[in-house]
Structure formats: C-alpha cells, structure tokens
Length: 230
Image 1 (cartoon, rainbow, N blue to C red):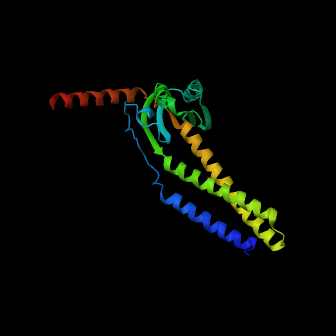
Image 2 (image 1 turned 30 degrees about the vertical axis):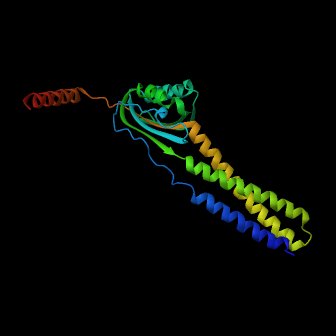
C-alpha cells in the first residue's frame, strides 16, 4: 500500500506533466503591435485589433508646454475626465515633469488626442502587447495547482504518521505559494488589459531672446530660399 509521501510524489509528477502539456500548447508572447513615429498625426485605435485578443497598451508622450505646472494639472484632469487615474508622478522644478496615467483601454485614443493638445508633441509611441497566450497558460497552470492543493488537503486529513504530515504540509505550503503568485500574475494582466498606460513627459518650451528670434528668422529665410531654388 502506498504511503501518503509516495502519493505526494505521484501527484506532483502527474500535475507537473499536465503543466508541461499546457505550456507546450501555448504560443510565444506577442510583442509590439503598433509603433507611432515621432510627431505622427495618426491615432491608432484598439478597436482595429481582434476583440478576442487580450492586449496591454502602453503609450509614451513627450510634450513641450509653456507652463509645466499648468500642463501637469491639465494632464491629470484629462485622465480623470476619461475615468482614469494617476499611478505615479514627479516634478523637476519649472523645467520638466513626468506622470504615469492609467486610462480605460477603450478611451486610449481619445485620451492621447486630448493630451497632445496641451502643447507641442515632440515624441509619441503607442505599443500593444498581446498577452492572450500568457493569460491562458497561467490560468491553466493555476487550475492544475488548485486541484493539486485540494488533493493534498485530503491527504493531510488522512495522514497519521508525523513524517507524512510534515511532508504534506511542506508541499501544501509550496503549492499555495505558487497559487498566490499565479493569481497575482493574472490580476496584473487583467489590470494591464483593462487600463492602458500613458507615460507623459512634460518639458517647458525654450524661450528665445531677441537674438534667438533674429537667428530663427534668418534660418527660416534660408530654408525658404533653398526650397524655392530646389
């Protein structure tokens, strides 16, 4: 007759094999789906992607504004307008500031458009990562771990030998730790899919002195002259 310790070994081997099968059926994680060039005026929409895929959207924006503090307040108000929130922010005096905003993924296009109205866009990048297979794989492995935990709990109730009890409790704690980690991963993936991330960098516009405006005007004239001759 098999002892509880032997049964634990067989159970773990069986569930490990099941986990390997689930993993082998999953595809590699998707990478960047979209990338907007600098100063691009096009706005990609998450609606263009198949709705049965789980996508994590991330946007990076660099905008020059006349007043950084006012720009920051407007950016936060914009996120709140789209039922989003501020995840983190930092300010470096009157020269620059950065903020990470989270907005519902379906509102990303509109939110980015509103933020670009704060000033002069110097850089914009929108990227979507397909996490569908990662989510399915983690969900399958979590299900296997939960089943293993339940079987271990049943074994623990039947165990009488102290050594077997300790072995089962040790394995049970390890499995529960794996379950907690997987549940946390699924929670983070769900949050990333539901709320897009916008990393906004605000910089104060450079103010030109009289000489600067003269040089700028001369450069503009040279550009026009070159364009006409070409």
